[in-house]
Image (tube, rainbow, N blue to C red; front, top):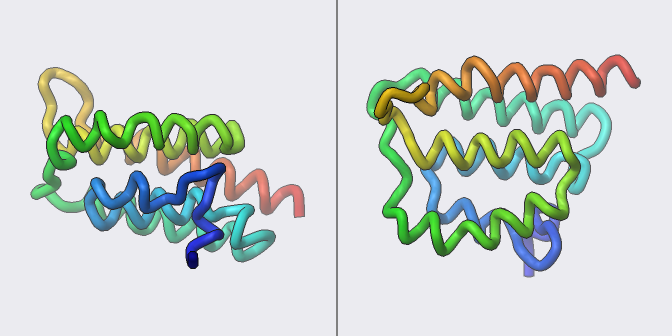
Length: 136
């Protein structure tokens, strides 16, 4: 089966991303494949592509919340397995991409997914890019 560069343990990214919006699914896939399919400069490019997809997602005011809560429940065990087998820096980013896509632009008194991506996740990915560039 193709897509081995998206595989973490027994699951592949699409086991989670099929329930997500297009841009956030792409962002999650680029983060997950970093250091698996891509290394060095290619890994940094993958992380930048993740930022590009997140920025496009956050720039629009018509962000839907992810499908139904059933989709989230069905996906949670897969996501947890992927997170368990991922690097620490990936865990936080992937978890937050999934969360932001789940809530979309809903507020309910909390920070919107858009705000969270802009204020927390994009800076975390940029910090990982900087760490890699400084190590090279």
